[in-house]
Amino acid sequence: MRLDKFLKNSRIIKRRTVAKTACESQRVKINDKIAKPGDNVKVGDIIEISFAQSILKAKVTELIDNPKKDDADKMFETLGD
Image 1 (cartoon, one colour):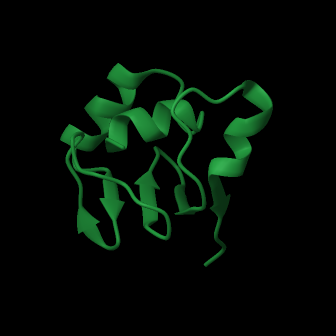
Image 2: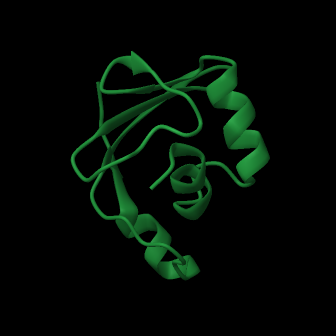
Image 3: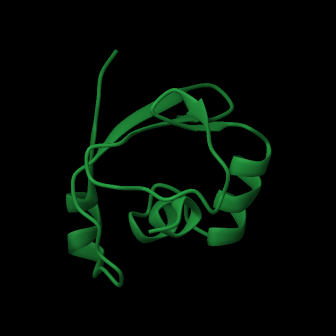
């Protein structure tokens, strides 16, 4: 699954265009490598997103194409530093 689509489907970022912009601004990493919007995400990957004041680190646990709102939080688990 594409990174920008995963970020939108998991509801980490609300819109796919915002997710794409975040990736293009080099604020998203997959396994400590700067990621592009079209990079593939697979189960077990560690995604790190730099927001304005904080950094979110999450592990991909499941890939769902069209998740319902309740299923979106099953797609990742947040990791503490």
